[in-house]
Structure formats: C-alpha cells, structure tokens
Image (tube, rainbow, N blue to C red; front, side):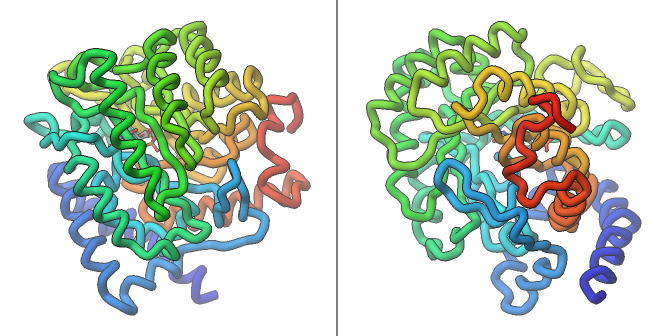
Length: 379
Ligand SMILES: Cc1cc2nc3c(=O)[nH]c(=O)nc-3n(C[C@H](O)[C@H](O)[C@H](O)COP(=O)(O)O)c2cc1C
C-alpha cells in the first residue's frame, strides 16, 4: 500500500515537476548534476535507502546467466556511470545489474562542445561524448575499493573501450589497448562481467573492430589472456544484416559468453523521429528510435546462435512491455539508459513489477522460460 503510494507520487512527481525543471537546462549540465546528487545521496545513511521503495523483488525474476547470479534481469547500460561512482544508488533503485564505463586505458576528456542533445517527442538522445574516460588505472582503483558484497546478485559489468586517441588507431595498438584494460578489470573480485565495446561510433578512426577480420584479431588476442570473467561484446546496430551475421560467426568461434545488442544508432536515415534534428547537431541516437531495430537484431541473433550466445537486449526500453518484447525475442537480460531519463528512476521497479505480471499472464513460472519464445514461434 505504502509502496504503491510512493510509486504513484514518484511517477507523477518526476513527470510533472522534476523532468520539466531538468529539461529547462542543457542536458550536459543535468547529467553532471544527476551524477553529483546521486553520489551525495548514496553517502547519507537513511536517505540512500529511500530509492529501495521503488525497487521490486520477485523469485520469478532472479536468474543465473553465464554462471553469474542476477537478482533481476533489468540493468543499467554503459554510459550513464562512466566513472563507476554510483553502484550503491543503482542497486537501491532496483537494478539487477549495472554496466560501468565505457572505460579506456588512457584518459580522454571527451569531445569539445555539447555531448548530449534531447529529442523529447522521439524519446531519444543524440550522444556525442566521444568516449571520455579517467583511464583504467583511476577507475579500477575506485572499483577495487568497493566492498565485494555490494555486487552480490547485482553484478558489475565493466565496459572496456579503446582509448580515443590517434595513437591507438592501428589494429595492433588498438588490440593492446583493449587487452591491458581487460586484464586489469578481470583481476578485481568486484567485477562480474567484462563487456568489450567494439561499436562506439564517434572515435578517431571510426568504429574500431566492427569488421569480421579486425574483430577476429581482437578476439584471438583476448582469448590468449585467459580471462576468468564472462566476456560480452557490445554490438553495432547499423550494419547490413550480412555484415552483422559475419561478426556473430566470428564471435561464436571464441571464448565469448554473450552479446549486448546494441549500441547507439549512427545512421539517422533508419530512425523515425518526431523532432527536428538539424545536421549541425553531431552524434548518434539512443532511445525509442533504436527499439525495433535492436529487437529485430535480438531475434535474428537468437535464431542464428540459439543457446551458443547469451543475449542482452538494449535499446529504447521505456516500459515492462518493451523489456518483455526483447526477452521473448531472445534476450536473457535487458539494459537501459534513456528510459531512466524520460520516465524517471521509478521505471526500474515498474519494469520488474510489470514483467512478473506479463510472465504470469502468459503462464510462465520463471523469466528463463520466456526467453526466445517469440522467436521460436510461440506467444
Ligand atoms: C548518455 C549516453 C552515453 C552512452 N555512453 C556509452 C558508452 O560509454 N559505452 C557504450 O557501450 N554505450 C554507451 N551508450 C549506449 C547505451 O549503453 C545504449 O546502448 C543505448 O543508449 C541504447 O539504450 P537506451 O535506448 O536504453 O539508451 C551511451 C548512451 C547514452 C544515452
């Protein structure tokens, strides 16, 4: 009863007060402000537990994926907490896992000018951050200082990307750059999963390892590291279908546990937008315009690779129905960022609560039973 009241007030408060206030300011400033406030909140005993009122737990949602326990399948996707400063608050908000980063070996301040541009009618963001990072040594030291207990049933995925610098553009230098970071994060007990971001669209030299030949070089080197944590590849979403398939053909030959589908949308011609987007605004699209494209890629991957690869469905999830669609298409886990910004932080609990309702309505006793059902031609 109290929780339902809190949920209703939170949704209304976010939609009617917090969001209109935040959206009066430039998105870059709002993002910085949100991170600053969240850091403060998670330090104050009592206050830091308040977001737990939004969270929803249910045994139907507790799941084991690539040998790792998740208290629910809904996670924070890479890019919101680049410095990995917010695991405490993300756990309390009700996420079942979170991705920190992307982190790169070398530090980089990010692109000049605005990093984010809102497309509110399209529920999308144009992102032009350019892989800012404090660098692996600073971020890994921060992660290593957290209590490992924080990540019990709430695994931390660290997204590793290639340093955005002219010196790491060549294949061999790029591979070395990734490998150094992966080895450092693999050694930390706080880290549950490693994600390799091959698909950051706006970096020196373009998307680094999104051709089959170059990906092969990277994965051959990664295999030689004998990493102990499951490895996931963050996939591009704007490749022609046959090129996407060729990447999957490479991935299944190496020690890769899963694919996260996917990253931002580079090709604006594929996006149905309800806002004006002048060509002068640089960057790539998140949110609703990526929803159907990513669901289709999840379906395609599930049909092609079946249980050989675990799929994480990411792109435009704004509701339990959106998350369920990706799960039934073949995703074992789902991730989001943009939904949090347009719908509010209570969304995570709402999705988990809605998933339980949807699973029961379809006659499933556990989330794992629903994975891939639509791609197998079932309801
Ligand atoms: C503000 C922002 C920053 C992002 N930064 C990263 C990043 O550093 N690494 C990465 O792999 N993906 C990054 N992404 C992509 C997201 O992880 C996600 O794949 C994409 O936004 C689609 O999910 P969404 O529609 O729920 O936002 C970023 C997205 C946003 C909105």
